[in-house]
Amino acid sequence: MGLITKIKHSSHSEHFLLLKYPREPYECNGCRVLGLGPCYECEHEDCSFYLHEECANATPSALHSFNSKCSLRFHSRAPQRGRRFCDACGQDVLGFVYQCKYKKPHDYHPSCLKLQHTLTAGDGTRLHLRKKLPSKCLNCGSRKTSNKIEGWSYVSSCGHYCYHVACVKDMILKKWKEGYFLQDGNVNETDNYLTLQSAIPSRELELPSRKSSSKARNIWRKAKKAIMLIISALFGDPTTLISVLVQQLLSD
Image 1 (cartoon, rainbow, N blue to C red):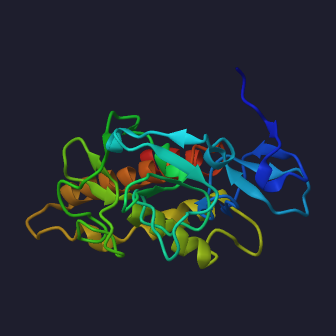
Image 2 (image 1 turned 180 degrees about the horizontal axis):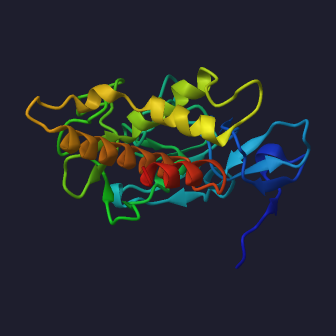
């Protein structure tokens, strides 16, 4: 079956939605989470409506290997009142969500349930999705996120590079809110590349003085590569923004 490029969705039934590759970040009208990759966008230019592919194609139920005994049901809004967080990325649950039936239910954004279990760079570097961190996150220096949720993480095969999904999302979200992706109202791929690099904190790699400069540069390059691979996994694989940024980064 080929890729469906035009759909009707119950959350926006008055217009058709077209599969597009936006050149700038958007907020998904389904889960209310930042998006950068392919999405379904309203066919009318004056109607700013977007849905992640995962939100547009959400199924009534789902399973995930991290909670194989937990049957997840799709909801357009979480049944419970009060503030809730995605157990994968740690961000607020404000719209579309998958939730189990436990007394203290787990919540997952549709896009988080689709995160790849293994990410591979051109040189063979691999990152693996983990339910629990084997060591502290290199970004926040903790095993738990800022809102005390353990959250999922990506960990390199060597075990040296560990990052919360939540931390990497926060890096990009903060830059987006600060308007870094737009210059005079226009999106520029080179500017966005520099923006994503500047979003990666340097304090994570405060190396001991005994490390040589060449060793430090190599570690820093691998750390940047790891973060950019995670960004690509989190926000999709658009042919415009992320793919260009990753290719440029890996060629440094």
